[in-house]
Length: 310
Ligand SMILES: Cc1ncc(COP(=O)(O)O)c(C=O)c1O
Image 1 (cartoon, rainbow, N blue to C red):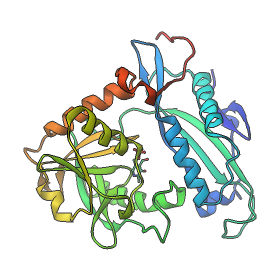
Image 2: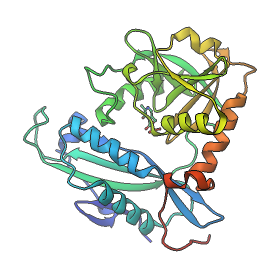
Image 3: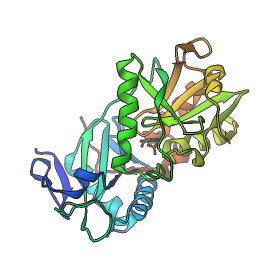
C-alpha cells in the first residue's frame, strides 16, 4: 500500500506529491509548518494524535504573521489529518507534518501578491533524543533569532536555519543538543525544544519574550506538574550560569517528548542522571500522550475508526 499525502487539495500517493523548483517557499523560507505526533497504543490498536487542535491553532497564528492564506477551518484541518493518518494506517509512532507555503513559481523576495498552498504528510517517527539516558548539551555560539528578525513564536521554515546551525555545531563538537541564548544572553531554547530547569524544587522556564516557540509540550508539562505533582512553574529570564547549578534540567518538544539533560557545557547536572521530578513528569506525559490517562483524553484524538491489530 503506498503512503498517502494531502497535496493540491486532495489525497494522493506521497510519491506523486511534488513541488516545482521555482516554488517561492523553497527559495526564501516562506512557509509555516507544524509537527504533530501520532502515538501508537498497541493494547488498544489505536493511534492517538496529541493536541491536534492546538497545533493547528498555532499554525493559523504562524500563517497570520507570514500572510499565508490557509483556507480551512480548525475542524477541517483536524478532519483532513485524521483521514490522512487513517489512510496510511501505521501501527507505530508517527509524525504528521502540515505545511502552509508560498507556492507561486516566481522570483522576488516578498510576502504579498503570491499564491498559497497547503500539504500534509505522515512519516514513522521514533525517539528523537535519548529519552532514557538523557542528553548532553552545550550552549551554542549561535544566538537565537529575535522577534524583530524572524518571529520565533511562528513556526516559519526559514527560521530553522538558526536551529540547524546550532544543532550541527553541537553534534560536530560531540554533544546531543544545543541550547541557544538570546542576544541579551538569556537562555532561550534548544534547537527544537523548550528548556526547563528545576531550581529549589520549582520548575523554571524562559518566558515567551525570550524568543521561544510557545511549545505545546511545554504547556502540557506545566499543567501536569501543577495538577499531578503540585509543582509550580515560574516563567522568567534565565541566566546561562543557572543552567550549570540547576538541580535538574529537561527539554520538551513534540519530537523530543520530555528528555532529561544530564550535562551542560561539560558540567554534570546533579548526579549526572535523569532527576526525580523529570522522571515523574516523563512517566505522566507518556501515559497522557498514548491515551492511557482518562483525565487527559480530551488531548488525544483517535485516528482509527476501528481497532487495528498488529
Ligand atoms: C524551536 C522549537 N522550540 C520548541 C519546540 C517545542 O514545541 P512543541 O512542544 O509544540 O513541539 C519546537 C518543536 O516544535 C521547536 O521547533
